[in-house]
Every structure is written in C-alpha cells, then in structure tokens.
Image (cartoon, rainbow, N blue to C red; front, side, top):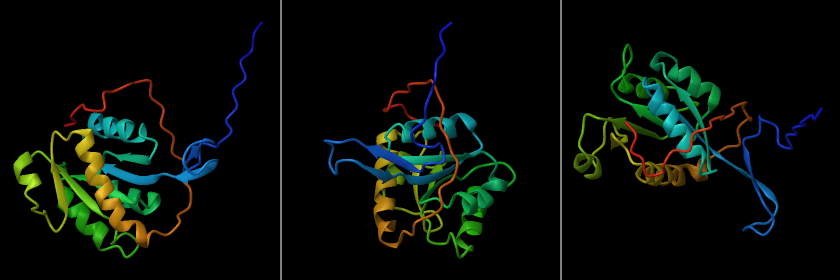
Length: 181
C-alpha cells in the first residue's frame, strides 16, 4: 500500500511569493499586492482572480455581493479595488462612495470595470467619479497595465498589513490574452 505525504513549506496564510536562488534578489520572500474584485458575475471575478494570481504578483479576493464589498475591503485591506459599475441592489458608484468615506480605505485606488463605455472612451483619459475605468470585455494585459499604473502610485504610502488566509485552487489554465466580461 502506497501512501502519499504532502508537505506545505509555506502556510496557506502566507501573503508572499517565494523568490528562488539565482533570480534577481536571490532567496527571499516577495509580498504580493492585494486586489479586491467586486462584480456580481462570478465567472468574471473567478477568471480575473485566476489570471492575475497566475502572474505570481497578486493576491486576489473575489466579492460577488456589492452589499458586502465595503466589509470585504475593510477585512482584506486591498492595495487596489476593481469594481463593476452595474450590479443589483447596490451599484459600483455607491460602493466606491462608501469605501472613500472610510478613513482606513479612502486612499485605496479604484478602477471601475464597465460595459457602459467603449474602449475608445476608456482610453480617452476620462474618469467616472474621479476614478479611471476599463471597458468590458477587458484584456488581461490591459488590466495588468492599469493595475500596475495604480499600484505604483500607491507604493510610497503603503503600510504593512496583517496576513489573511486566502487560497486559490483551480485546475483551469486560461489563456492570458482572453478578454473577460
């Protein structure tokens, strides 16, 4: 009878990615940036989570209930929030206003994701309630570029945060260039 023994050398609570010897910086732990995605479409949030986490640079929390988005943000303390505009019960504008009124979250960048505008309008530099936005369907390279742009602005004011238990388990291997809705 064969037994399989599994060992986790990094706990699932870890908010870090391991840097292997020979890579830039040698041995060490690199903290991943925390992203909260709020959208009532579970397929969209899951796809974004999987694709962003596959880069090894991000830890993503999905929230599919806009009425719970503020509490999720308080608990998770994201570096960036990706927020759909059109959702049932509470729209993205209301969620953004609630987050901005919270002193602990008011400096958290928000990127709206919406199907209400065209790609040309999104690239024109316009803002919605003072926040940039991306037109759906969003390509992953476009999303990563916008994410990095917003995170680089926030990096100077970043304060270390407690590590949370989040774990991504998927057997899917989506295409990085796949647009998301």
